[in-house]
Image: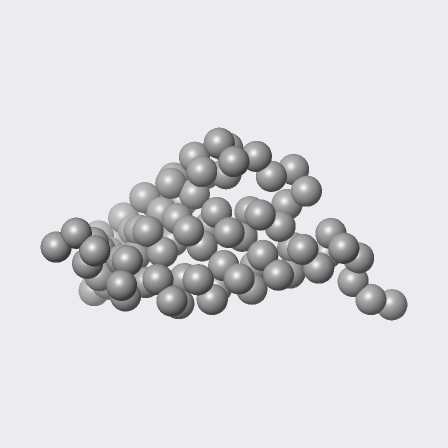
Length: 83
């Protein structure tokens, strides 16, 4: 009663995305950390397609940044790599 290969791939992708977010949020900024995290999470899907996953990740990063920074007023680093 173990995990199948597909289930394990999904679990590792989700765990990896959380770890990457934690590592990247301060040095790279919130939008980049969210985009990388979302892209990494999608790697666990058996129907992964790079172009589609990249577009979805950019959209998620933009929406989440607007919600947290503008909507909720969360003070998070946006672009520390660039300034």
